[in-house]
Image (cartoon, rainbow, N blue to C red; front, side):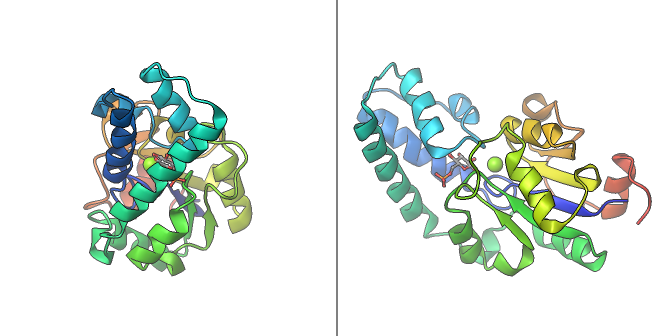
Length: 220
Ligand code: BG6
Ligand code: MG
């Protein structure tokens, strides 16, 4: 039966993807090119420095390491400035109800995020106590699609990866969950997330019983 759920943060619990996009786009524009929403899709779930490298490649800009670190810092400061507007009610629709249902059924809850800012965002949402394991960008050496972030999460919760569901809005994250041997639920568009075991538009009206049945878990 299902033992745990691991959640990505950005784009699953809260829509911070829009703030990452604004901050990255401003960086691109400083170098004279634009970053489209479609290109931004490639950056979801990807760590900060790796994202910067992808963006610079898109703009055909070559920067020495020192300057890349400076630019990544500027981007992060801008991102954090935008995140100051996050309030508890910004948790995406249905998230709180679904987490409550998990708690009521003794399903463990963990976070598996590439972001080094994850603890801060959870604080802003007043959701830190919900997560029994908190794996973020400060704790992994290999980014998604490597399964490390989710395997660490399962280990810390003391659960079997095969009895775990991963919720992800990024293709790289779905791939990481699959590589970890977990069931994956894509949150977003089917065309982007087709590698997931199941794709949902969001958590609204999601029932644990129908979810576990659809994913082939035994009754809780
Ligand atoms: C992921 C986001 O959750 O975290 C990416 O989807 C982001 O867009 C990555 O680049 C790293 O985040 P941060 O906050 O450490 O720069
Ligand atoms: Mg995400």
